[in-house]
Image (cartoon, rainbow, N blue to C red; front, side):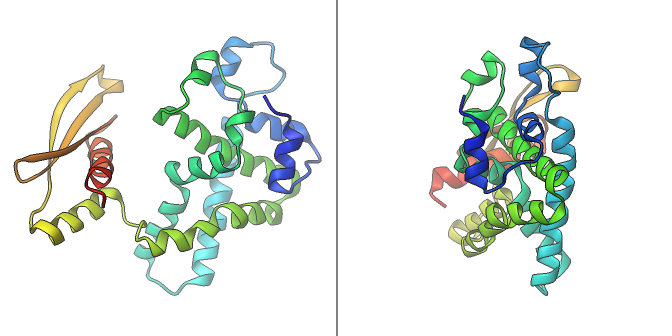
Amino acid sequence: MRHLLEFEKVIGFAFNNPELLKQAFVHRSYLNEHPDFPLAHNERLEFLGDAVLEMVVTEYLYQTFPNPEGELTNWRASLVNAKTLSEIAANLGMDDYMYLSRGEEKDKQSKARQIILANAIEAVVGAIYLDQGYPASQKFISDHVLIRLKYILDNDLAKDAKSRFQETAQEKFGITPTYKVLSESGPDHNRKFVVGVYIGADKVAEGNGTSKQEAQMSAAAAGLMAKGW
């Protein structure tokens, strides 16, 4: 595991309380294996950072663009969703600093790791806010999150995957895609759905999730990749 001083250099912040930054990287699974670890996991910092992130992004969009609420809401969602945040975290090398259980450490490519990294970057925002206040967290978000907006808008990524897949399928084939649940499993409180997305009778891709809607979104995203859209 790399020393957090290196991460401070990467993000351009020297923490007054380095333990705050360290805590931002502690996943709850690590504490299950290290109950004597002196710091708590990062979920409270994530809770705070999520609010700060949304406020900074919302304020920027409101002050910068005259667009209607619906468009601004979609743009904000595209900036603060787990996929975008996990990509930013990966670009910052945050995976190298995480405190994870042995099991989580091995599982580097899963959706669960994506969510862990997205949560960690929100925790870092929370840590910066507590250590140096709103202007510092605002600068971090501007430098690493808001700069992605141009790419998102240039590539029409602000729409969700399901909307993009439907629009493209209608444009290319004149057909509205359909979705079918292929399997359900797990107890009521933790259902797992596998959904297929179809253009006509042809199955394009499958996706999974803990709800039918999430599985449909996953299938649409897989469909966009399968079709090269």
